[in-house]
Length: 242
Picture 1 (cartoon, rainbow, N blue to C red):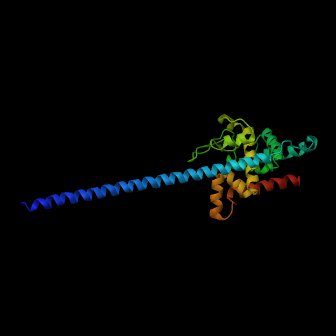
Picture 2: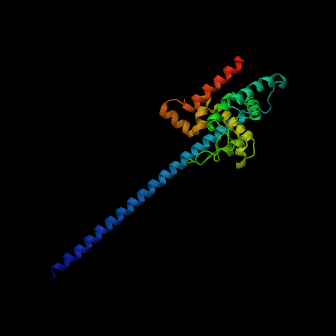
Picture 3: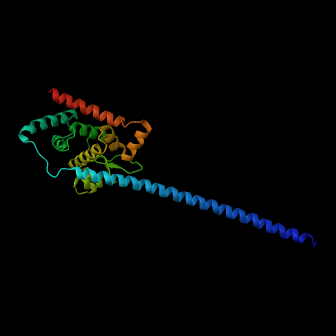
């Protein structure tokens, strides 16, 4: 019996060593997982920060390019052409796009040197052809999109700031405010990319989403960009023909 005591104590000691090993090993695994999670979190934050820095730099460059004084052509000469284009929009929409909206859109699009038919077709796609200024889009992981131009609450404030406009959530349902934001954003995107395929796809998917689409497909000619441009060109051709 005296000889068995050392074996018993040795067994206990061995069990303690094994238990300690597993405990330390589990702790190390938890620490490694925690460190990996922290590393991923930091990576996500860095990517988000890089995207925000890129956006701010682009916004700053865009604002620097804006002229302080705009030369305007005499309205007597331009108004008939504006009304002709506006009438085309009202007719094509079966009256869903109001004449006052159309006049506003055509006049403001001229200031940014953007084809008003391109903006009209964008609004048409965004609202499913309803041009409903009070439209609330389906829920996504980023939230809902609001109004005729379907801006999200994480995008609209900085575009409003860039446009020199006040921001309130209720204003997203104002058709004139909504159209103005879409014009400013399109102008910003077109100047940033100097390419309407990229600008329109970025409007639809976000700038990050456009980048991913381009990496996956080798181009930015999404169905969204293609459809809007083709229909806008058709409107232009019809107006010129008349």
